[in-house]
Amino acid sequence: MKIFIDTANLDMIKEVNSWGILDGVTTNPSLIAKEGVDTPTRVKEIAKIVDGPISAEAMSLDAEGMIAEGRKLAAIYPNINVKLPMCIETLKATKVLSSEGIDVNVTLIFSAQQALLAAKAGARYVSPFVGRLDDIGLHGCDLVGDIMQIFMNYDFDTEVIAASIRGPAHVIEVAEMGCDIATIPYNVLKMMVSHPKTDEGIQKFIADYSKVNKN
Ligand code: G3P
Image (cartoon, rainbow, N blue to C red; front, side, top):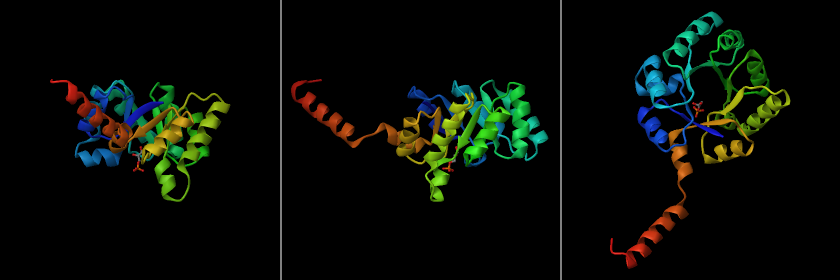
């Protein structure tokens, strides 16, 4: 499974990139706003750091605007793809942008039928929001499984990005399903590294080593 980080914070991106496990980055308007910079500036900075797909969200609400904005975002750096929120205008824009070789990540996916339509329009990625479905009393990971089954049935090339990940358990559940990508917040990535028994084991090895080694 490919691991993306879901943030627009450069320090977090640089740190996780240095771990050697990072395959890409997703941003959204809320994450970029937190950093107090504009979208083109920040996504260019990110794209220079990470050798993998970087999602940058277009804000237009009509297909024509999305296409124009998408072309501009994709031209910023070769590894930038255009994130568009699921709606009819997005389907139209996805068809055009994908036919021009511009990758589109259709986001805010909350049902399998939305994912099916996005894939048919030529989306390179769909992003089902796992945590936000959990928030309304559903089991968000089930949606990831449903979408993957449909894409497998028809050999769609569209990759599934499990988004709105809230904890390590989400990551493991979608990984067990064989999900293509999980986009994970920094705090969850940090949690995935640690285990109290690992820390305890390291301390014991250090203590035992120092009993018989001088340096
Ligand atoms: O990638 C989508 C993500 O940014 C949304 O996460 O936690 O705001 O539901 P969240």
